[in-house]
Length: 145
Image (cartoon, rainbow, N blue to C red; front, side, top):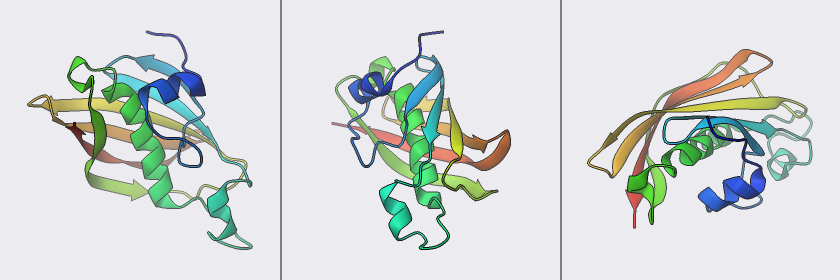
């Protein structure tokens, strides 16, 4: 198991930057296999201004994106990924179980399920808050030049 990745380490693996970098820290990872990340959800997030005024809820699509970014940390550790960009190729079986609101801490887990032809793959993602499942699903990716 490798050491924890701070936001600086994450930015060495992923091209995302504020306001779209949705992972604050990787607290556990096995390069090329699995990672666990944290997203501290604060009322200062720019999306809360419009989603929704008076009742701030983190958009489900951003929860999926946060899971995918943790998956990107896993994928970008693969030898096949060197010199490539990992992009969404599909999203399957995603289900939302609970709302995410300011003050929550998302625990995001991504596990590599498969890599085909060195270019296409699947990551299983889960998001938890206080031990409760928030969202889960299969995230498909493609490595592009």
